[in-house]
Image: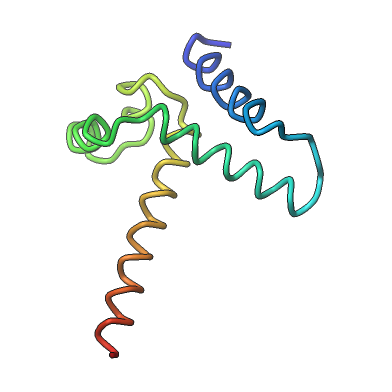
Length: 99
């Protein structure tokens, strides 16, 4: 494992440990894993640094990951968070417009 992989994995596992998660192969286990991946991405990525890297590398996820010293998986998880936030904003605007 590279230093970057070790760092991202260690934080991911520390978040599991913090919540006292147990390993389960069920819906609850999936939710726990998604929560852990979200929190890992939020702790490892600074929003301003991400925006700067995204502009510098024209959105190339591999280059952004290298610049921010995180794994590609962490970048994908962070982008999923951003997409989720954009969807929430869009849905709330639509509901306000309908009122």
